[in-house]
Length: 120
Image (cartoon, rainbow, N blue to C red; front, side):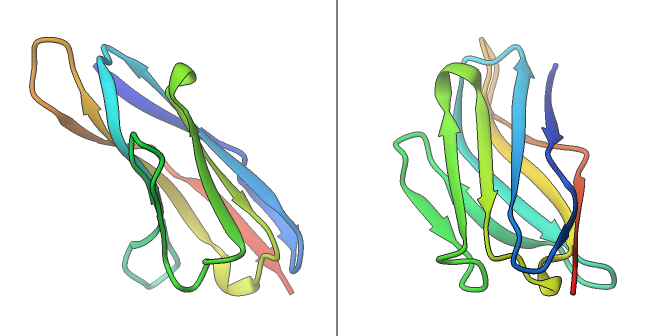
């Protein structure tokens, strides 16, 4: 069994910063892509940022230049540094990972979500 555990959400004023973390645990041989998605109230879940095993990153236009995704492969952990936060960034943020398992096929796993609230 593989699970993702997120941390770091909370309440912050506009212009502030937060750092999200997501640690994968369980029967893991390796991790391909890891990423962050978010879902605001009444809206669909959307991509925020992704990072592949080789380190290449991809960002939504709305966060490019403000957010930075990174990963620590030794810890099976992905981070999202969020700077210059805006009220429009308020959402539940979900971690996602494409896991390579021992003796089994790949598995896409989602975290439980962490709430980020940005006040104006």
